[in-house]
Length: 407
Image 1 (spheres, one colour):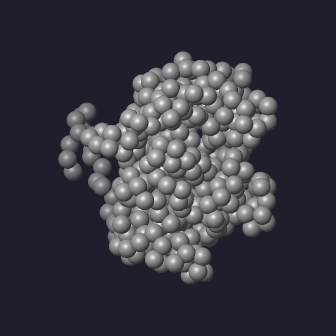
Image 2: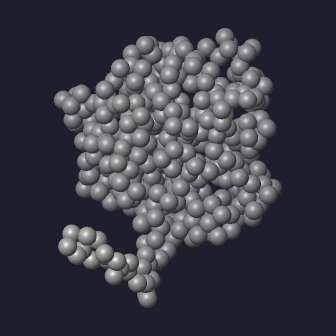
Image 3: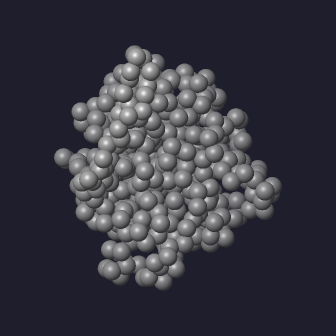
């Protein structure tokens, strides 16, 4: 694995050591970037060097931190050509361990936590980050302390409990969960791995950018549609593009980065429309796409800057449009997406219709999780009855004399 040169504050640019665990910049609270000595590895770390390597995110080990990965086989998910539009690709992150893209970031974070000797990790989560942290902590022998809204998709709760995590259900939003972690972490001895409040989740997520380039034969697309809650994946991919240019793998071309949010919680869209550098807290946040119900991303200023640099856009879609897209992608593409991922299809159609993009533009749409993680949510939205009329319950066996007998 790569040796960390230093950690760099995304606001003031100060350098911090990567020899001990860090959260955010002590001066201004800026999120930290991991920096490597790319010039030192450039001659040997080339696209040809990837040949024959395992199809996981650790194929890019020269630009990933950690000496001994806590891996469950994450990364190198399929890039599926759309059957509806030959210029659209679906990057299906639902095939990661724990069924979502969160596996990448938490894999890197837990890898480094174990290397630092940390014993207890805590995270506020809308669901999928919780599942991923619980899984990787179980694999690493580290305690996981999870704070989730009480209306989290059932699969996430079942997973976390099964992995042995300590779970607290909160009557509120992810922002309320984050506040509880912040208030208790010092007394409890937890290390906070909240979104963009530690540097390594971005490192895991940046491998999506490396994969997009590799799977498209080192030619970046014209646009990338990314469902944005905390925005780690967008930040990570943008970092990956910069690293690849420094390594000589790609040129200066960048895709338009499209931030996709739900109409019921769209702080990035609102800030973008008002040409602001930071977002305001979204009041009364509501959407069935749990991962998009983030009232104010901590690194909003980075996401908004990426949109500006890339000539991108921020788009909000309704829950009705989201679930229509869930059904459309499933029935026409054979891909059962998360509500967050399905939002990208709605956004893509909107921008093509409005002329912001042409149908001939090459676009990558990220499905960030498997629809199987949201069975209860999707069933409710599509009004699918789990036990249709006429369904007969399975007969119960009778116990006679202590022996189970057939009816």
